[in-house]
Image (cartoon, rainbow, N blue to C red; front, side, top):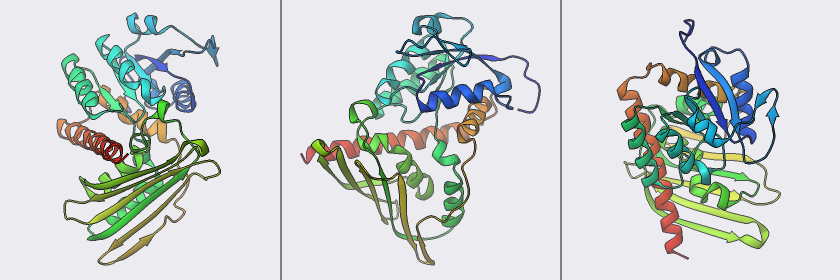
Length: 296
């Protein structure tokens, strides 16, 4: 990406929550990947007019504009599928914050649509660009896992907007799959106290070598955003995460990856492996949801 861009891709940002604001900031600042992108405007259900000189435009204008070639979907997870479909059908490339959809079949269908249209469909996974993940990847390489667990705690999250906990927490599942390979579901439980805005999902998974992994998502008022992990190997144990530094510009790093895809700088093998991992995680999330629903 070091070369001067021959052309710039016109971009619209859909949804201006936390992720949308970060995307707008990165697009407006002089970065290597931003040089290939031209921020046209943003789409929001709220009447905002403009944000830092960036104009609000209607969804209809974003879809029909010849100038807009790329959509960044940063809205609530429940709206992702519809927006992706509309922008792909309008002939635009799409970057979407995870999870891409709240169903495995929908994601598979959208990927087929992107391939038919010859467009890039990129699901953001900033958790794989974190210093903690880079540390873990080095720690587990070549080691024989005996058992492991990953617990994530945070404040309440609305399921209607962000999906079932296995989908809203898919970044943790992505960590486990990226570290230990494809997983199978053994069992899952969901404890909920809706009046207290509390939920705890406990998932028992298994590696291809039949090693057990437990994934727990616990959310409720007063719970701090935190990650606790424990991995036991034949050669020793890793208990919790040391301080491995600050995560800097992870959304920008994700944008760099997306621009490389726009420029055709990823091999077919790399793209196929990423698609396989993403669809596997979405399939697992759906299996967990089905399992929990069947136990109600």
